[in-house]
Amino acid sequence: MHIRKSPSWQLSEAEATPETVFLNRRQIMAGGLAAGAIAASSGLNISKAFAQEGRAALEADRNESFELDRGLTPEDVNLNYNNFYEFGSHKEIASAAQALDPRPWEITIDGMVEKPIKMDVDDLMAKMTLEERLYRHRCVEAWSMTVPWIGFPLRKLVEMAAPTSGAKFVRMETFNDPDVARGIKTQPWYPWPYVEGVTMAEAQNDLSFLVVGAYGKVVANQMGAPLRLALPWKYGFKSIKSIVRFTFTDERPVSFWEQLQAREYGFWANVNPEVPHPRWSQATERVLHTGDRVPTQLFNGYAEQVAGLYEGMDDLGDALYR
Image 1 (spheres, rainbow, N blue to C red):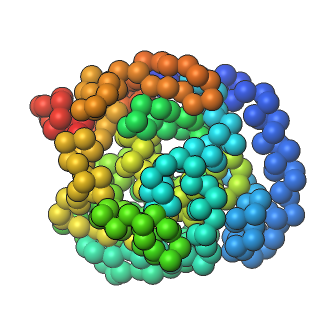
Image 2 (tube, one colour; image 1 turned 135 degrees about the horizontal axis):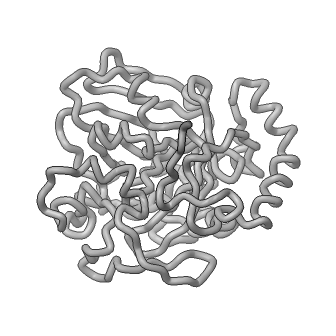
């Protein structure tokens, strides 16, 4: 007899998703049926109109291995509370982000790989089996939300890239177009383009997830369309948005925020309530929409899945989590 032991953070679907959110999602899916049919008939080639005005429905089976210990953050909250410095250094960037045209969108995979690849994001999606996962999201600013992401594991892209044995890191890069993103033009002191990186072991961990949708639709511009990363055990700034390049390398990338202030935003950025930000505590977090302030969990509640990645790293302070 096979007995399946659930992770400590996993609860039933009824507990994870409030009924009002679930029913609203069904209505969204029903209302977007025609758009979804168009997307499916064109091989997931979603038009600019659908991506920015209403967003096409994007169905995917839910992976029941990824559940939550709190309700989902309502979609309207998530759509209107975003960090995306390319469009401004504040949370209300949703309107400005509509200047982004996420179709067509070329992805480059290069560096220490058998053969460099350039392909459109829709062609990449067509090669992958999409799934929905419910993930926590914890910002270094000490607020949190929960999101029903749609996408595929980053390890699938790693497998497709066929990196050479010497590759140790995956460096990722965001688009860099000041004519589209006014934040790039008005904030020239930032080290554009936005760059992030993970180790090969982190990239191949099953939690590392490339996102193309959320809330049953293609992912919104302000949330990182058309392709972003979700690393639920790390602070949110590691989850790079609007990716255009994946480079496999043997040199550790220096990320955007690490270039600006390594003492506050280091390479590892694993969620740890015991290591405060230099300017505030990380012991608790403010849950968006609810007003609740709750204790922060080590690795944001995903320790069972990722703690093994850091075994042998003796310093449980700055060296590991910053």
